[in-house]
Length: 293
Image (cartoon, rainbow, N blue to C red; front, side, top):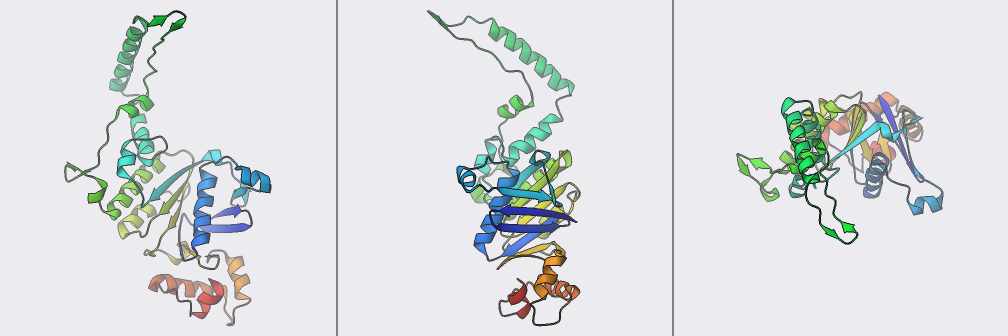
């Protein structure tokens, strides 16, 4: 089990994870803050003027130790995945990262090296071309060194369904989530750093969960924000109602139980959460829900 500690001004989130944490709740402000805290941390943002003036920052600790964000990669999977935008292979997009990783496997192939040599010949020919000159102003044309990044820019990508090019309007949300998960899975296999993946979708199907369960839980950690709770182990669920509640945070749970009207142990609390997750029942009229979540 691993502990992720995020502090955003005065709001602290301690997320204890066995590899995947599915987060559900109706506290939209806290959900919004946690999502953006995770993005801010792992996307390596520059500290804003507001944070500088407030003399504060968004901080992150991994297993109670400061963690160098340079040692982490970050991916995001969302229901707002735009096929047309992704097809442009813009820098930083999930598809461009995926294609670049695939292309890097070609870098030592004979065909790629031959293409690289041909590119050098073309570069020499361009260097010998007559330059346009006007008084002291002269053009200088150069061809960059051929590499996988240049090859990526030459690619044309279409999304295909049943052998035909497809637009977003004809796709299913379940398929676009699945596609992103499959790309993230392959990227995680090639990843040499720690990886954090944030999933922000309404639901996760059994097929989605099967892929998520196949990630290496020692180096890849998933934060999944959903509206419908999938079939997962109760220990892999975090609740965001009045507060962030994590049954794996035994000290915090036992602290909350001190004010609980019934004589409940930590094991009793685990049983209650397990029943809630199994039956998908989160009733504000429930005494346990009212006090604990």
